[in-house]
Length: 199
Image (cartoon, rainbow, N blue to C red; front, side, top):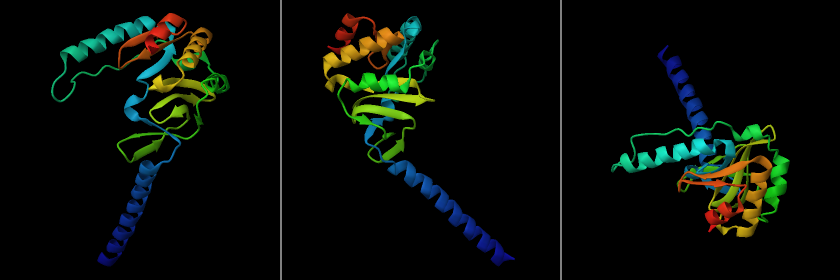
């Protein structure tokens, strides 16, 4: 009886070891042609402009937390960002974004990965990016519609092309840019605001 239990335990151990080591290696070794650090996800994003007043309120709340709650270990309070109208409600099709982003004349990437540190990489599902590691514009999609549009360090892009892209996105789908890190809010229908933000 003890022998049978021993065999069962060894088999279970080997199965669990195989199962977890396989998942771990997939997560750590995911390959892609474009990487963004998980901390930069949607730090600078495009959202429906109807949320603008809500964003102003949230920016004030975040600033208050930053000024009042800091200690040597970080922050005690968490603010969950809200949106009255989500981007997917704009029904922005992938093919429409493809045509616009193509004008930036930067490389398109179908295999996007995210993670942290030197080795941890996971596939960013349903994500397409344009640019290079740490300097790109991305979008998530569901059923061929954009659910999120965000960017990292686009200062390396051609400024005039970015201005034209933002204006077109703003006018066609009534979008605003929100930089949660610097607390900037930009009406993408306004060329002066866009130019000031990119300067």
